[in-house]
Length: 248
Image (cartoon, rainbow, N blue to C red; front, top):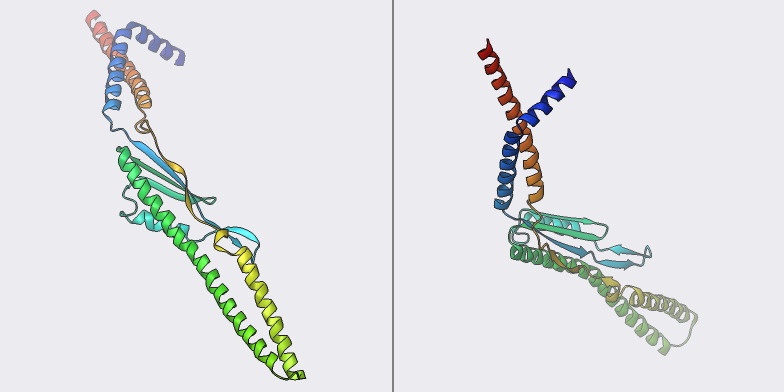
């Protein structure tokens, strides 16, 4: 039965090939015109490298916190991200931004606005690490001066066991603070904070990424052929029935 059906379809294709070819060509032409009429959509991309800092406590490089909350804010505020057809996400110390629109200049403007915002906001986040260091460093230096002044005052007093013990304690504290200041200045300085920055430059596609014109034409050709085949089979069936009735 299946063999007979396949044979019948082949016979219809051979017999009605002109009809099938005509309808298929019309479908190809229609899909080509449709593809040309569709609004071209371009894609813009930008990659941001998340800032890092050296964590002396864990002795390792760590990413500066807060980028995910900044991204969340950008997604929900049109003044930061003016395009609705956009995608922003962070992965592996990188922030990936994609924007789709029919205007390339508009894409560039939107990408510049959102990248500038993310970089500036995360820079402020990094400043907190620097600020904590500077504040702690300043307090240590104040304490150092107080200890030095106390030691000078003790030096003017008559040497006795009690003053010597106090002096030794202050000296030990002074040495400890000097070492901490040295460590901070060598390791936790501003230079050891690598700020968030735009990696390379903003990319905007020269050719449209949507719609896929070739795919539209291919789908139109396949659909046109299937429809033409069904019409040819139906036409052949009707014609055969009329012929058989006429013979009777």
